[in-house]
Length: 311
Length: 248
Image 1 (cartoon, chains in turn red, green):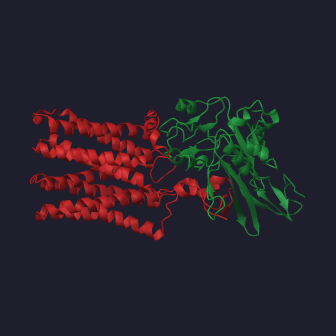
Image 2 (cartoon, one colour):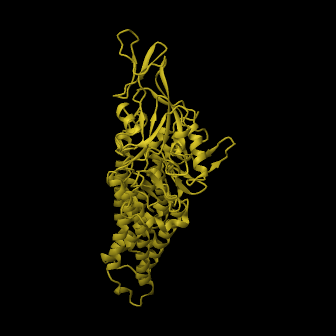
Image 3 (cartoon, chains in turn orange, red):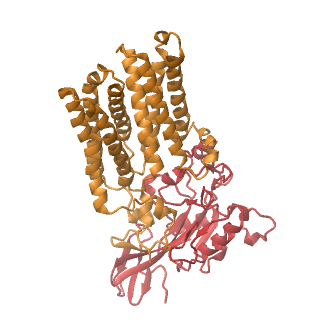
């Protein structure tokens, strides 16, 4: 597949916003004793990230003015469900942030809101991942690991972001207490992503040129795809990157999304060098963007069998 | 609505049956399709850089060419490809707006261009690459089986067929109801080993292809076995089985 920048930015930013909101909600529910002003500020960061992701998603549409129609088919379409859950998530986080920001007695805020934010985040991860995992013939995606990876990578980026916000806001206790979790979830996300990479490396495409054309000869090749200048099918379904770039990207995303953030978080926790949290955020952001690029680029669509040769 | 339509078996399913024996790869169906549909209800189908080095545009139908076998025992096979109007279309339930739907009355899979938001998700969910986003109009487009032609009572009855079928000079394209056992298409599928593309995904394409029958060319009998779909070279002696079709 050809990775679309709008979708890469959308899933990366939304994932981080969800992760951040879940971390704040869990901290609140477990009684971490966080400063309300800090929680409110961080929730607004999550709202801004989620809204930016929503804006990015509009650039994927040919007719953005009709985007509201995408809520119609929630009975059958995971994309429709995602389009419904994303605004619900943003509204819940915003309501919670408003309560903490404007309420005269923020300590009285009900536990219901953090719980609802967690539920909406998890649901949104599930919907987003199922958009990809439900397409049975894109074999690289059609697996529960897709759901696991969207959730864990979102959670890992939320944890690192929460730690950085804690450091930036002078919450001396918060970041060190998150350290173990940030390290563990990032490591787990790396492990499950590697499992997905290993699975994809062993995949045997179910469709062949023989099944695509019904011509069961051993030696069948395409002589002409039927046009010379390319078309939607050649633009949207091939990543167009050199093989070397593709192969390097697999290493680059693992280094930036997982390895370097792990080292930085470990350094921050063990040596008290808290600026490492701040450094980890842009590094991980670049890494997750690269991971999403690779996620799309690695998916081999069976339609590509029909578009091999121009002549 | 569309989900329910795909669940039940429809009483009528219009489809094309494409005879790979006689397609000569002239692209007349491609140009005729483009002309009819760019001027009709499904259009316009945009072109970009039409007279430049990289011409590109929206088409509902493409003719591809494949070569099978090993030299000198090879065959060139021209292979028209358009939307297969699957009986279980994977592109329909994924559409977030309901713009993609399958008609209950005749099984044609259509896009409502007034509802489509151009998200391209349906094209991801089509294993055949049958859908093309019209990048100027910003909506997904696809073969309509000339739904604005086949029911047009202003046309003489013999013209109420898809533009590609009418244009084909060799009669490689048959059109009809595959649920009607007496139709020309059902008969062709039944008697000549009509097959579906990518059966592994269980999309039940309505369009079928007729495999090459065994022919005798320049002293060798080569062709596609109707039952197995395999290319075969038959020994050219008196004991060899009679060719199904002899071009000489």
